[in-house]
Length: 284
Image 1 (spheres, rainbow, N blue to C red):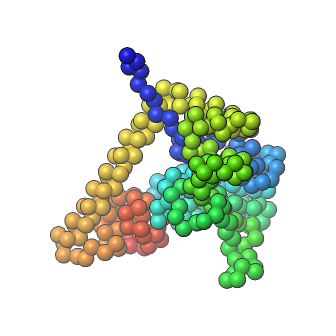
Image 2: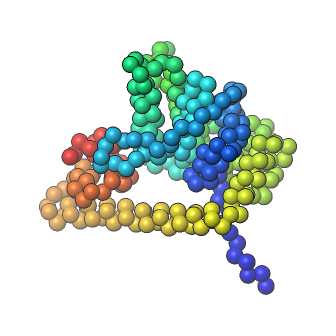
Image 3: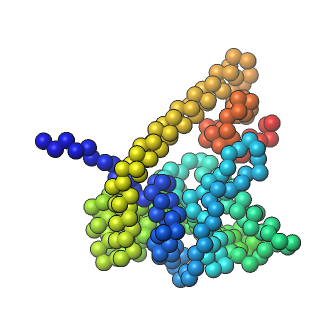
């Protein structure tokens, strides 16, 4: 009997494999083709930027984004979101505007040279009926932009996946670069037939999954995520309990304040209270 342990195949939608492939300068050709398909524009040059952003706040840990690159006159901030929590847009916007702020403060005047595009690839969306929604900062009727060089693109990855499962050949060919992130190895091989980009992505993702080091890292990441989830639950319950014991109401603000006093990181408090970063920091 074959007693070989079957390894789990990690899809490209997870942060670690996504960063290992598209955040690695070794695979710049894959990133270039991917972004060209996303933007529907030719890209000549790519510069990888530091993905760890300074927060400017001693209480918070450094913010780490999934992918940050500079192309011709564009700064692209990319996030792969396997879930769609209530705070997702706020968190990603904070990261995005952090980068805009750091870029425009270079030199003695405001840098209007670059276009800034934030791109969300999001799963588990329920209120978006299109594959992609594009947002700008504009007036009420959309006739005039407040800032001409800022855009936000959000892709509904579940809609893209539906084309695969519904065997919609036209849209499968159009959105292969999105569908591929949530397919198993066998389906990836089928999808990659006749498409060199998807084929190379499939090869690299397969090699990554076959690596014992990668598998052990992902196992560690799972463990750390479970620990983090447990800590969040304990922190939240502790906040509730303290509110009851001290005779104070258990509103979100009270809970958040007590979690702050216990030196619980702001991002964890945001997760469990749905309060914004500004609301939480104003409690200090």
